[in-house]
Length: 102
Image (cartoon, rainbow, N blue to C red; front, side):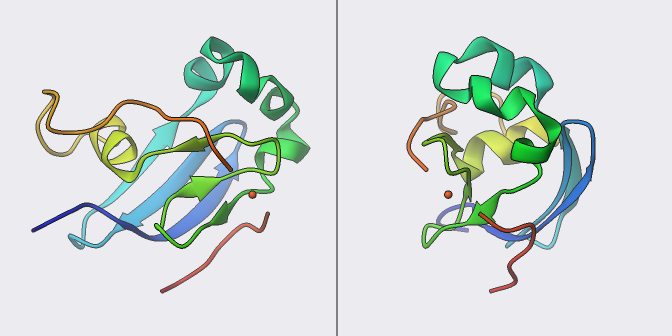
């Protein structure tokens, strides 16, 4: 597999999202600690804002406040793949709706 991508994402409640990856694996991620760690993500502490994510063209999760998380990081957070630097760190960029299937 050349690169990890997000195929689907469903809001589960609180700061949790169920993600389907292009590998066929499905995992849940709890992003509460991540959004507390990054100042740009602070608007996401409001669950209404947090739940309003979308998949961009990469595809990865993005929010309208300008925050996104690399698919490789989400993959690792979901308990898959290597935990080394081959998979990216949380990155900031961003966008708006709860699910998109490619």
